[in-house]
Length: 165
Image 1 (tube, rainbow, N blue to C red):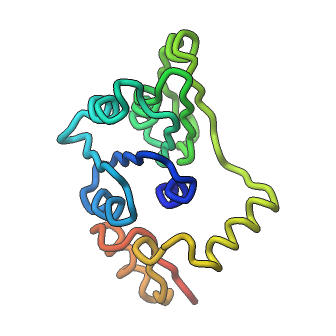
Image 2 (image 1 turned 135 degrees about the vertical axis):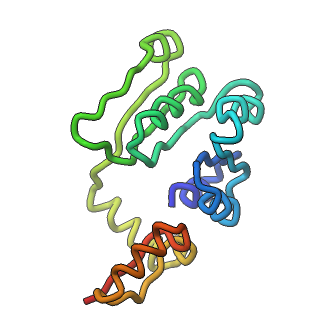
Image 3 (image 1 turned 60 degrees about the vertical axis):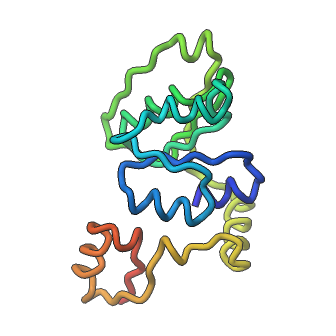
């Protein structure tokens, strides 16, 4: 979803980092310029090589994994912004090098709530089909299909399932 919103904003280069190859493949199909699996490539090196050594202007961390949050801070450029979108388990802590914030002027912020205007804009994007959820969400599961849907998500066959009573 963030990838498609970034494309709508005419972002010059979109780099997606994920451990799951199936998610990286979907990201490329949805318009990512580069997909990086940190188990096989160095994300910091890849981002720096594709940004002239600067780093990313904006980073969205859509997981609550503390290592991913720290990676987001590292790949942001001087003055860059890292947005935490994925929630963390209560009590989760991260270690932040204060020099990243002080000398490199990086910002880390969260994104959780929304305004009525945001809600209307999101509803319009869905209604107009400006954002393609077909590769991300699979509708049509009944409550009795919950184990099947959960298995498909676990195997990476689908990302999210819509369950109806």
